[in-house]
Image 1: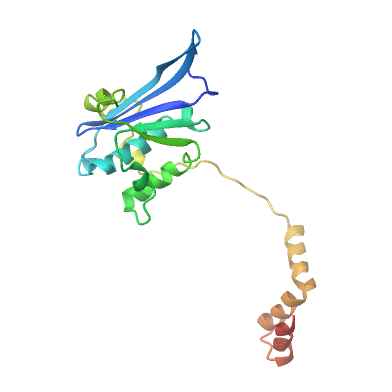
Image 2: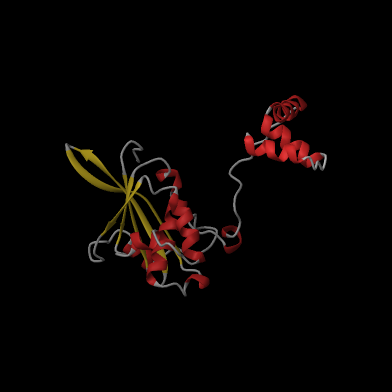
Length: 204
């Protein structure tokens, strides 16, 4: 069972066949730290993603894993373990392409809680099998998002404020009481050509 007071470890991997992620956590058992699995996810690569390079695929994998495991990671500290050595520079790229920009935005909210750790592919094993034998892209796979759904931006919330007429009257009065705004309003609303008013603005 996850303990949300403890940090998580997120192992991610990609292959030519799919994306895989393994969420782990270290618990103290019999006074010894023991790392164990919490959640596994995988999915096959989509046809449109097959053209991505290795580095782009890793960024796609991280963005996808964060979205799918948001319930666990939203307010917790965690390590991202990957064999991609260029991860940090890719995420900090100043002129990203449209795919990278989308992933940067998706990952940005986690940057304060996330630490990226590079490990050699031979050591990086937990997500390796998941990416090489991924689950199919169908409705039975909870980690799969259809092309149509992924192109839609969900509405997180709607804020409605009802401003009564008293509020607008107060704003209107504040303009007339402010010397600079009062003169500006006269110049704009009355098509005034009085140079003394224009000079008065310079003196305020």
